[in-house]
Length: 289
Image 1 (spheres, rainbow, N blue to C red):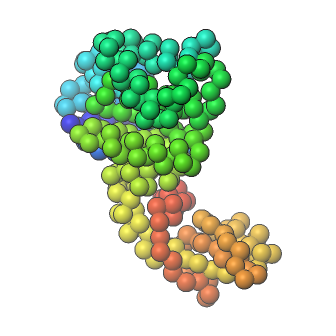
Image 2: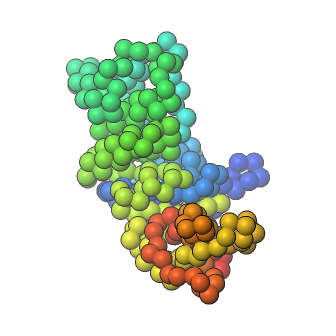
Image 3: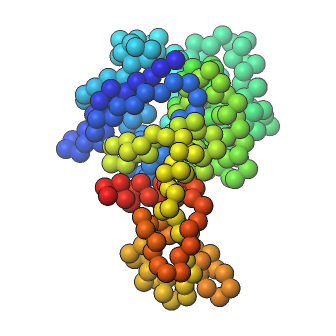
């Protein structure tokens, strides 16, 4: 399986949101990581064929998705950032309605709904109205909807919004198990959502993808760029105005400050073991240097 973006551009009025996106994806989990407003949602809506680009094309196994139409869309499972629910629908109503829209056979759909409800922890709540669900429960229901007909391409926009830490871990396990022989694109601004499960991670800002590497490659890229310093709290207030800081911890009456910098930021700075969050901060603060 291969999905290609070829020089995709998209503007809203006078604002260019995507600026020549060209990237190729195969099977496995891909992370699309960037701050809010980076253009992530626009990119994945084009991938889901619910939005047309102004320029460029998306190819699925060499074929333009605009020509494939319903044949391509039938392969897509899509969880948008904002999921709307009819106020009178129960969780089961919503999943049955979604299954009908996807053209699923009723007996199989019923079985699949029960399987997924158990998988996302909603088996005891399918009879309740969606309007009574918490934000996390609604998100889990949306994830079940996206997985209903075992799509070949699964597109998830901020899928862990509203989930607690335990639910986030369970979600990552579901996606890891599901991704065999499938393409999963997970768009988020939360580094931990993709750090453990994405084979490749795209860093996106202002409509441009700066890099696409594995988590390990990003960490290697940060060698010699992450430092630990200790300073009084009163000095930190001023220091953080001109430094890129990824973490601060109180330690023995001082503040231990994790600093991202191209060179040693002070005489008392010691090199630290980098992580993906360090790379994220580095790319979005130093990519022009």
